[in-house]
Image (cartoon, rainbow, N blue to C red; front, side):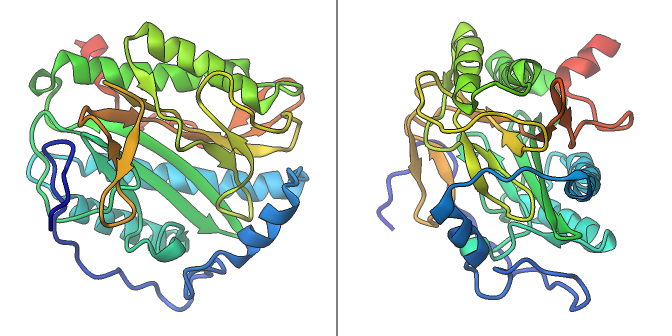
Length: 311
């Protein structure tokens, strides 16, 4: 009631959880909310190396996750609520015989995360209509065939002309920082090394990198070792090897890097109320680099700068 919001957004009502058909195979936390298998794996801290079958399973769910994100992005429009986008995501998951991984993960009430303007990550889809000039990140993870596939993108709401130049620069910088890290990824690179590349790119654009949240290992577990921080001089453990699957997902703020959490205990927002953007891919180490398993498709919705380049 007396919470001091840092920016213009306010928590809005949310609708009940979407039901999942009984036939859909669920992760271990779907009913209890507790990811017991993740907690057990965390004790060892071991970084799992996937065999060919494991990579194939991960590749399949990542392709499905890409398709679902693309459907969600196509639903972004002025006047649409993030609750409506969540329903699009939920339907698309069920159509692919997949479970939406965020649903009931430690109690998260929706099937995807939607983070608008100053929300950095883990925004809960709600009944606020999107406005022209907003930015919205949609974070999708699917569970299918025993594997999770995870990705996200930030897009403008309405035509690019409705957005500020600073918002457009923020999106482009966050996107390019992710791809700068992907370019350097190959066996032998330490997971702590990605942060310097990302932060250098971000700071050159006049922005800052969030430190509280990082990329992570992913396979049969939604989140596991290794941790992949996005800032310089971090102390992450581990080295990239062929068969190691993980995400890189820098969160980039217009102002300072610090974050606070709303009373819903999920929505992480910038401490200074400035806007934040993020992009994420799931990838796996190969002999000489990485395979980006959530790569964009030929018909994936265009980013704002791709639209402007077409003119």
